[in-house]
Length: 450
Ligand code: NAP
Image (cartoon, rainbow, N blue to C red; front, side, top):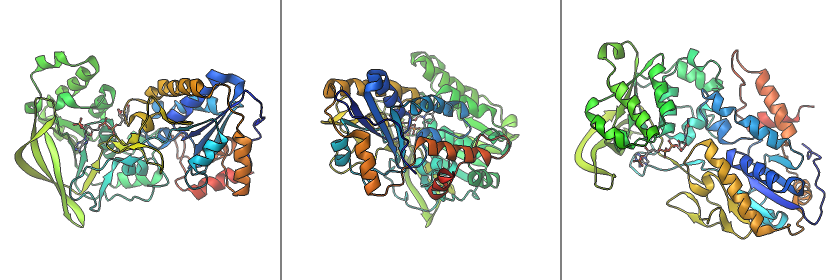
């Protein structure tokens, strides 16, 4: 696939910016660069996949299409003359960070946090235990995880974590095929879920209802599932007066938990899948002979700092599937300072080293909503503007194109992506916006069509 033919002219006050990662943080940074310098900037957005939008495509739940709609905003940025998508290029393999720094005035790492934070307990390596990056990637058709093939023939699934990703996983495990109408869940996941035998999804929180990281809208969805019924033990809920000390969003979330606790038993029994919130429950070991058959839990109480503290009381939940939803880590890059504990690049307001920056989850860790990345993108461009002035006359995109030609890189352009998108839309099942390609070769094939 050939370069886009977008202008690459070299003049004195031109700034050349390379952004690594085409998710929300990458596109908001490109938008900010365009707003900062207008015609006097050229932005190349690199992605290792031939398709753009990162987490919007492979992280946001397939039944949350309204959230995925934000990609239309990124598309208008992508179609600006001075912003270019450079897909199917793996930084670190096809081109190094140092080479990019030689070509561009600023290199911005917008690589997100694609790796699961380990729970650090025995048994994590057993069969049918997955991190959420892998499990979410499976139902969202990420090429790296499309072949995960989780076994859903057991009766109980345990989801570890009390954040929105845990809610996504619990909801997806529970929905009927009809409830996926209008979603872009990939066919392999839809078929597997239709055949699922799961009757109980336990959501484990090591702390209590007041400490959840779940937002009200997402929590409220559990009340409207066809097959799933949320269950909260009233004894886990603090006195209702204590809710007054919560900030309003958190209070709303807790109100949902209170309403789940109030669902009468007869109604609960109407629905075949129980979504059971198990609070004050810290996982200690995942057990099984090769494959998971249970999870050992220790009861906790909150200490004076609000942290979970073990009580010594333990129990086991028999289960055949475990998904850890406990946060993510950025992929380190050799030579780039990294904060191991926080799982992100070491940076000062986005600055890592001269000419090297980070933004989004790669900068601040996996927190916030998609919109949080917008001020992040604008913030890092402010720093870059202070640092690079009028630009230093680097080769920029024509320099990269020469190198890509020499190395015979099969660069996928935004126009190529639009062909992939068209092909995905053409093969969508009825009512679905698209049927994603889950294999890079299939994507390249669709992109190469005349
Ligand atoms: P999160 O919001 O940080 O939640 C992580 C959860 O895992 C917390 O409840 C945490 O408990 C728990 N945890 C961490 N380490 C643990 C351990 N070793 N053992 C047991 N529990 C552990 O992370 P997330 O759910 O992955 O979400 C990431 C970000 O994406 C968040 O900002 C989230 O809001 C966002 N997101 C948004 C949506 C949406 O808006 N629809 C959907 C998905 C994700 P403690 O609090 O005790 O540490």
